[in-house]
Amino acid sequence: MSTSPRERRKTPSFVAEESSNSVKVFWLDQDRLIESIRKIAVKVGIENENVVKIILFGSLAERRAAPGSDADILVVLEKDDKKFVDRIEEWTKKFKVGFPIEVFPYTLRELEASIAKEAMNRGIILYKKSEA
Image 1 (cartoon, helix red, strand yellow):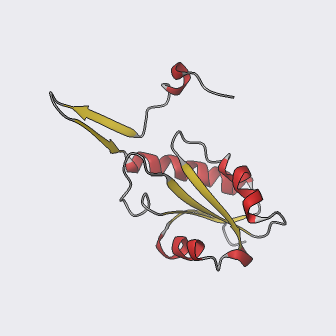
Image 2 (tube, rainbow, N blue to C red):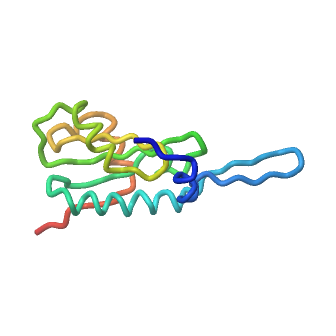
């Protein structure tokens, strides 16, 4: 299912543009993008009991993102019997914001992966399951 150009214009882009007579400058509205991702992360976390934590990491979390970057999201799951690669598409579909997103859905047992460690140490927590 594709969207028409008219439908895509309804949501303002996260990439802003300014131009003068000779130069066009593009930049990323990182604050607005992070807030949009945070809202989705909270909704995803609340709706999915298996989610322990959702973390934004990489260039966007470190405020180094530019037009052409993507948003990296670690989703920590209590457990999942599917293989890691088989989970990616399912979880990526939940994070549609009109910006490229790469989702890494790891279980608690899989958190030893280096990319997951980086996210846990340097990322921004977008959602954390409350302790009951």
